[in-house]
Length: 444
Image 1: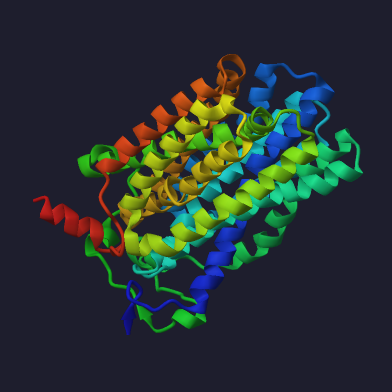
Image 2: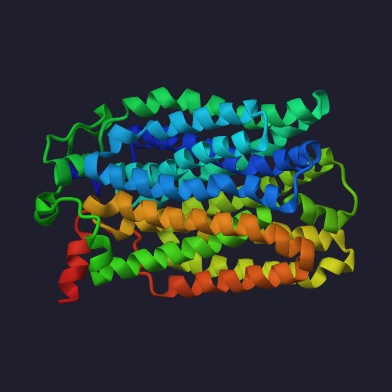
C-alpha cells in the first residue's frame, strides 16, 4: 500500500486535471472576452468611461464574494457538495449577459457570472491538490491553470469570425453567451467527481472512496487534523496561518492588478504601438501575442515548478514583469513596433512563467485540510479584488496620463508583489498532510 503523497502519476490524476481544468478555460474566456464586447457595447450604448469601467470590472468584484463564500462552504460541508454549483452560475450568467436589454441587466448578469468564477478559483485547485501526489502536485495544479491560456487564445479566435459575419449588436451577444457552452459540457463530469480522499479521511472521518486507478492507496492521517473542525476564525488568529494568508493574498492582489488591468486594455495598447487598427486586426494580434508568448510561459512553468520550486519562479517572474513593463513604457513613443511588441510579449511570458501560475498553486499548500479551501478562496478573492481595481483604474490612468505612467504604476505594483513573496515558505514536494504539523513543531 502506498501513501497518496508517494503514488506515481496515474490516468486518474489526468482525468481529474481535465475535469477541473476545463472550467478554467471558461473562466478565462468569460473574464477576458468582456474587453472585446465592451469596445462594441460602448459605441452602441454610448457608455461613459465610468460605465465602461463598471462593465469590465463587475465580474471581478463578484468573484471576490464567490471565492470567499464557496471556499468557506467547501471546508464546512465538503468539496463535492458545491462542485458544479459554480458552473450553473457561470452558465446562467453567460446566457443572461447575451440576452441583456440594457446596462443594468448586463451588470447583474456579469455579477452572477463572476460569483461562479470566484467559486471555481477556490474549489478547483483545492480538489486537484488533494488528489495529487506531492512530487507532481505543482505540475497537475499548474496544468489546471494552464487551461487559462486556452481561454485567452480562444477569445480572439472566436471573436474574429463572429465580427466578420454578424452585425455589431449580435456579435457581442454571441461572444458573451458562448461562454455557457464549455461550462455546460463539463458540468456533468464535475458532479460525478467524488469527494477528495484528504477531506474524507481528515475532516469527514469517512471511508475513502477513490477512482479505480487509485484503489491501492492508503491515506496517512494527521490525528490533529482528524479531530479538528473547520474553524474560519483560526485562519486569522493563528500567527503563522495569518502571515501565510496575508502574504499569499497580497502577492495575488498585486499580480492581478497589473495583469488583468493591462490585458483588458490590450486593444488600446496595440493601437499605441501600431497606430490605427481595426477590431479584427486587434483580435488577430492579441491571439498571436498570447500564442507566441503566454502559452509557452504557462507550459514552462507547469513542467518546471516541481523542480525549480514555487518561490524562485514567483520572485523572478515579478521582477521580470516589472522590468519589461517599465521598458515598454520608456520606449512606447519610439515607434519601433517590433521592439514594443517583443517587450509586451516578454512581459506576458514572465507573467505565466512566474506569478500568474505560482500564486494559483501556493495557497492550497500553505494551509491544513480543514482550512485549505478557505485559504485558497481568500487568496483568490484578493487576486480578483486586485483584478477589479486594475480593470477599473488602469483604463483611467491610461486615458488620462498615457502608457508611460501606467507602466510606472504597474512596475511598482509588481515589485510590491515580489516583496510579499520573499517571506513565503517554499512548498514544493511537501506533504499536505504533515507539512503544517511539522513546521509548527520546528517552531516550538
